[in-house]
Amino acid sequence: MLTDDGKHLYVSWDEYHMLIERLALKVAASGWDFDQILCLARGGMRPGDVLSRVFDKPLAIMSTSSYRADAGTIQGRLDLAKYITMPKGELAGRVLLVDDLADTGHTLRAVVERLRGMPAIDELRAAVIWVKGVSIYEPDYHVETLPTSPWIHQPFEEYDTLRPDGLARKFKI
Picture (cartoon, helix red, strand yellow):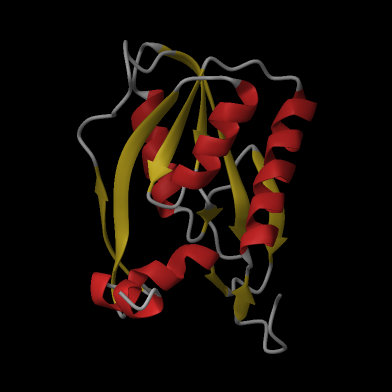
């Protein structure tokens, strides 16, 4: 639900899963047959996992990080992992890159540029749930465009501040 000021978007677990399913349908409707999925950790892990299961394709993971200050709301230096984790082989062929959103677009653009430099990758396309209006990168697939570029409050963010003692209190352990 987008707030009246257009600066915040609150997403429930049900909405989040429905959006991932809609993203899968968009990719399927394109008719593009890809070989592997590469998700960007952390935001792309849940969408990547679902798409990997729906399309029955192997899932690779690449860690990235750019949000560091003010509870992750201020973008800092972009860090890209040196290695890509996957069960076997190498990232190759037709690859679907999956993340949760194109916020500023800097992370996606940097990853795409890096991957396009890998000779084993024949074709690369990107899929995200949301594209913000300020994004400098337009992925091949997305579900929603957010022209006001609100801060997205995703349902799993409750775990950003929840610690084991808080879980113990929740379950009265």
